[in-house]
Length: 224
Image 1 (cartoon, rainbow, N blue to C red):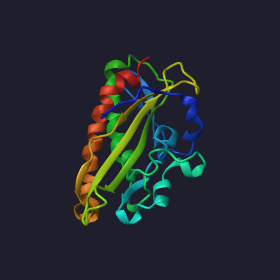
Image 2: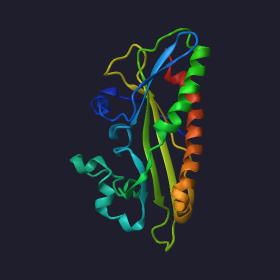
Image 3: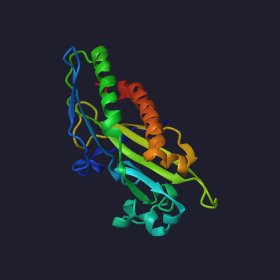
Image 4: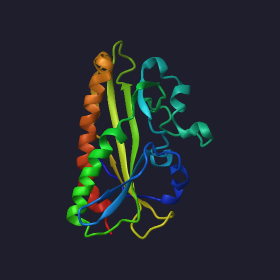
């Protein structure tokens, strides 16, 4: 897991509208502290020029052509070809309709509990003026080895937690923490079995570890 420090907020402010996939909620503590929390799809400017995955993205060697590679990058919108445009993890692949991105439904409620507990201890009745964003960034199942006849597949999950400093404005840099647990590898048949049961189970484990990462980063994210 890793975290980033600061990115200029002005770069992404115009991209935040329309990206959220659930309404913001206000987390309140027993001492009167409060913090607005919004879950959204991380904008490309904050996501290595990638569009976030709204559903599980499955990439097989059969769909690893150049067109597929570029179609998940902002390069196709006229920004030029990025150095990582041909990385297989950037290929469009196939969206699995039955597997919607789970951050809002699973991670966010757990994050709310951790935030509330932190506010109970550290909030001192303070009402935060800047929201905390939980940004789903990547959820993909990508072949490990194109040369193999029956390649294993790597499950990747990434999420960003970010917030402007208290007293800041739309031009203030975000404080950012990125959680990227180690990928999990298995045969594609194992991932697909029982309506992608193994994907769901392993992703929940990854999200649980990211909730712990968020807990560790709250003093930095919520510094006043």
